[in-house]
Image (cartoon, rainbow, N blue to C red):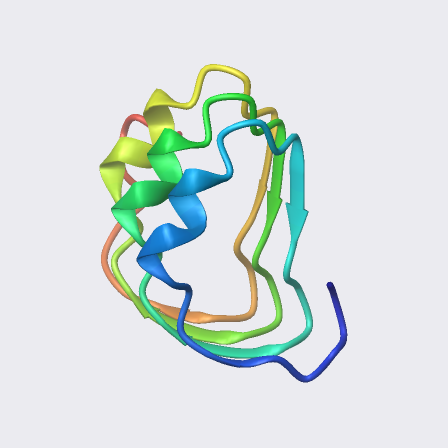
Length: 87
């Protein structure tokens, strides 16, 4: 779904897609924060949210995704430091 001019926020229900392996929402117009429900996506190996206008802090819970090998968050408006669980 990258590059489709999608706007709005990530819905809390996104965490219900627990079998999803890759989610690419890059190069859209998404705003708001990363929902902590993303941590329910236990099979997620790649998450692309780069090139949006998302803000807030990066939830530390995202580091609990043991299958996550690629996390792309560049070109957003996130604040704070990178959680130790992600680094």
